[in-house]
Length: 423
Ligand code: ADP
Ligand code: MG
Image 1 (tube, rainbow, N blue to C red):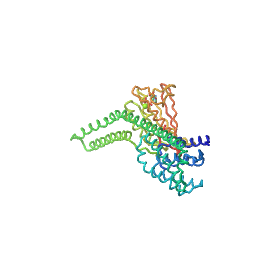
Image 2: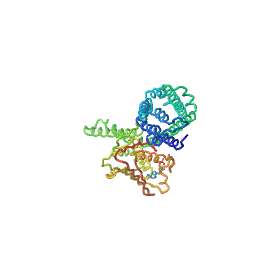
Image 3: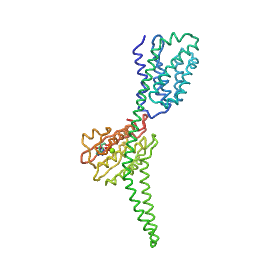
Image 4: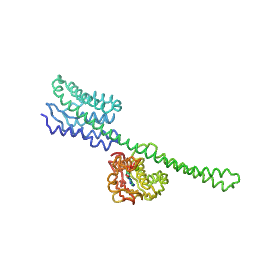
């Protein structure tokens, strides 16, 4: 008899990895995938469904899918744990069972490369095929080793519908995992596209900013070529020339540090450095609009996340602030450490046009912009980066007075820290 509740419980357990798959998408560590799929594996083995006199558990699903997504180490760990747990449950000839699993492991090892390159549809087909193969090969080989014949007709054929159910569930799980992966990829692409837009918009002001030192260098070189120049003046002019060239170089290298593709990794971010770097990158853009950037970064504080993404988030706020002050103004960046709850609050305030209630409410929604050439993605990226760092954002604004962003971030590295890129 089919026990419906058992079946539903098992089906639910099988889809359990999905809940955790998304927030930890970036952690492709084999051990993580192993734990993710070990849980449903153990639970389905503990509560199998009895159907048509044969024990059906869905262990093949986490085994096959976990192996294909995790790679060789995950496969060995999953199969090893499964064997150990099966032995614990008792009533089995472990060595025979191990032998009957070998073909499946072989097939999995053979498929890794292909699976990596396959698209979503092919992946669903592959998983379906492997689950089917596993069920058929394991049950029959085990029967063979145990000396039971005609097992195929007496047990396999009647349980065919159940095997199909198992395959369908496996395909559904792969479908959902692939959906999550596509969404995450798209999110990454939006962030990347927005970054390139910011980079290109800042480019003009950087070029402008570099021209000033170059012009003064040109003037000084002209002066230096005057043969009547005395030695002390010559020294002074060369020093100024070098200083100006260094300034031009600094502006360009700041800009390049924004434009360069960065390796994503979680690391400690020194707030004072990250904020002053962002302020430097923004400074040429600010100069063009007559905006003065004031920073107060005396306290030391460290948060955790991807430095480049964090800097991009701060630049997005700063850029909006500068754009909100077409007639010039002041952009203030500072932060305070809140010792008792181990957080830090960064505040970035402008004296710009401000926003009304309605605008404030829509802030952060994708494609919401009030600018002719705006994308409406800057704040969305900002919100997603900060959320990925387990932080909170509060925005206060008054029309005609200005806007202030308050970002609160944890100072310690939380266990469940995700790479700062998730929505
Ligand atoms: P974009 O800058 O391309 O318009 P954003 O997502 O960066 O897109 O910003 C969305 C909208 O939020 C802006 O168009 C603007 O109306 C508003 N906004 C954001 N920051 C500020 C600010 N500091 N002052 C005034 N308005 C702002
Ligand atoms: Mg913007």
